[in-house]
Length: 118
Image: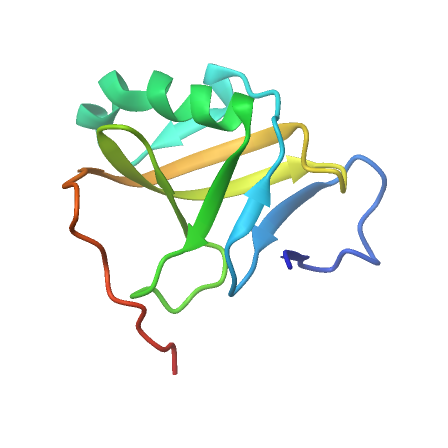
């Protein structure tokens, strides 16, 4: 289950970072390309693939080697995207900000081990 930091204290319409130690089923969400930031310019050609996944709903898995519950991996058809997601409101249907920290080529049949954190 996804946990939002300081959910009880958040004001209506506040930006909430997605946090979870478990996979999260994201519902179809609206997102604008201008609300996306990227670590490296070479990720830009692959952003449309990620945006389409988010607009149709997708599973976000916690990154296994990062000691943060707010970094997720979203698997596309050709790339694996490492992201942080901020939603507006509690239903997660409006993405207010998306940061792409990595965009790796996807290799069929190769997966990351499920490493324990801590």
